[in-house]
Length: 463
Image (cartoon, rainbow, N blue to C red; front, side, top):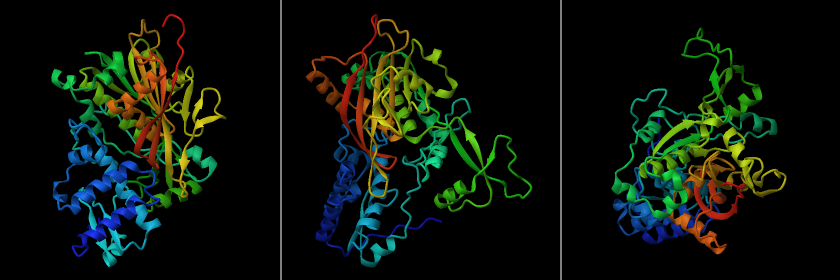
């Protein structure tokens, strides 16, 4: 049973509300969360002006997050992502940094209008559920989908406390995005000519042959090896035991760690290896790329990488998402590039992982606050006269991959990149290059991202 959100305290004055807002905006908890501060400031000022009822996903996207006027909430989940992250961040602030705040700001699930609570109400609200375990994106209503049309996607599970356990369960993931939601995206048809024309010219320039009308593009999402946990006794019957020949009993130490995170786990558990899962950020990045391709009138096809081989990627327009550590295709391409990315070594010069250029940053509670994404643009293997292109969205973790995809589909960020290239004498986007994106996160949740640097990739003669 879910707790019911408390009603706002109408006795709180406007001055008290403003003071509560300023305290949050200048807190250490929100020090590196610029977009969340902008989000919170906008919705609180609207509430203070008596216009809280006017708050919509569209107005927040345009006024607080800087989305263009043609922003579509149905196609861009940025506001829902940030609302989820803001709820978590407010919870962290009031629990750890300011547990005795005289006035507390709440953002109830399902609403964008903030509530202000004081005194006993603020203390009582600490016990309310803030939906921290809900998916980042509000669920879509799925249509039935066949197994061939569905691609299972799952969020990234944080590393375990012990080193051996970290490597053992780093790929473990739970289902986070329903096959029906993914089908909703992949069943989109290319848009009309008017909608295609709405794409900013700089996006078409950066993506090149990938956005050619009627181009066939393969969008491939990497599949990290993942371990699923199942009870020994299933279906509520003591006779229905788990007898999968590929399963292994769960080590007691790992079982204790899982019980800490999922208290409902009880009894003996088994592990099975899953080969078709996908990290949450990789999945969101794929959907971002797919939306751009579909809007340009191309015919993108979405596949898990596990069903494709390297020869299938030759002389094709390809978008790859994931990291070299669990994607053979991405490892193949990045081995020829100046930079590579993985969880342990960060962004490093290829062949020199002992000297990382950009690494994960964590706060005092060991939560990730900064990671990096990596965009790689290459002519496709065996492509003649750069007729086909391969674009790789990778990162230190899947939040980096998601940020890389969002950066490369954003006209504003591509303009920043083009200005940097122009400073070095490049009037157009080079045929082969890499871009590093600095990413602000709340652990694995993407909050914000910025351009960091770029590297040119030398091509052999004949390209």
